[in-house]
Figure 1: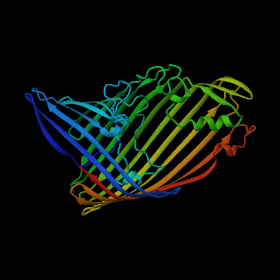
Figure 2: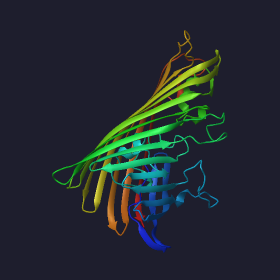
Figure 3: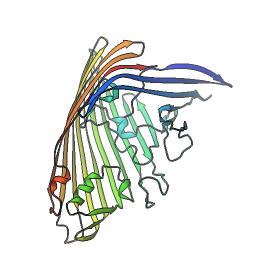
Amino acid sequence: MRKLLLTTTALAVTAGAAAADVTLSGAAEMGVAGSKDDSVRFHTDIQATLKMSGETDGGLTFGTAIDLSEVDGDGNAATGDDDDDGGITITLGGPFGTLTLGDTDGGFDWAMQEVGIGGSLRDDHEHGGYNGNGGLDGMHDGQILSYTNTVGAFGFAVSFELDDDTDGAPGKSDGGKGDTVLGLGTKYTMAMPDGGSVTVGLGYQKGATHGNVNGLGIDNAAVEFAAEQDQSTIIAMTDDNVTAVGGSVGFSSANGIQAILNYSRKDHEATGMTHVGAGGTATNARKDVEISHVGLGVGYTFGQTTIGANWGSMDTETRYDPNTEAGTNTDHRMLTEDTTGVGLSVTHDLGGGASLQFGVGSSETDTVFSGGTVGDTDTADAGEGTTKASQWSFGRAFSF
């Protein structure tokens, strides 16, 4: 989920017969940070967003925004580029709901709540077991068309992301095309007697890529580990069908207590791989990947201070069959990666758009290989074992 700016300052501009608002908002961070494998270092970051909005004579609202931090090194924004969102969003709203095109959330992400409560420099309260609920957003070029509407306590969203990449684009070296990513989301907010609320969200997405293995949109190490076992190579992939489902429940009370629980699962069904190894060529290798996540976040706000803690578990199971032809599917292999992590954030509001922030996150990943025939390469080359990671940061954040 994209980070939102907390406050804005506005300049009012009047042009022609219509009134238009132009706002420039920004954020900055300064502090110190470190990690398990890195020394303490200074940290600085800055972000600026330009927004423009207006209204037609008939009452329709329209607007656009560009994240100036996505301007490239030559000072160019990706405006007018049909193969890149360029950090741009354009909206049109009215009684019918809101249409948004560009760098926006798909229906899955729109409906789901993240378990990270509070904030930290570099988002260091996140970790390997954390999930931002992005689903399949960005599977193609990142330009998403989203329709959202809210009726009373009920809201829903429908989103589309086209694969409009051209030949020669990353992941499309063989000219393959992908299916449109369809996203659906719905959420319901119920008011509590004490002034708090409970929000339930459900999300679904489905899409596909066709073509070179580099277009999978997932870590190719999961493919390569199996190939290492008999010194073989995956040289082509024809289909990767992907679905994502998830749900979240969030509770907030009038006395500052928050709790969020979410669950999601993403399934890859990749077929049609060409596998070349010591035993010959298999023309219909198959790889299935299941990524399941569960997260829990709790928080408490008292006065100007918010404390948030979160836990998450990300489990990835990769099943690989070198050859799925009838009668030859005898060498199943599996790579299991289980990552759990915890995070903590402390935010103290200093007023005027300034805050003091502390964040720390830690995670542990267990990797296990099973099945298959070990050839000339030892299974340890598959990366078996336990790895740990941690990071922290402390400093001030400013919003303008």
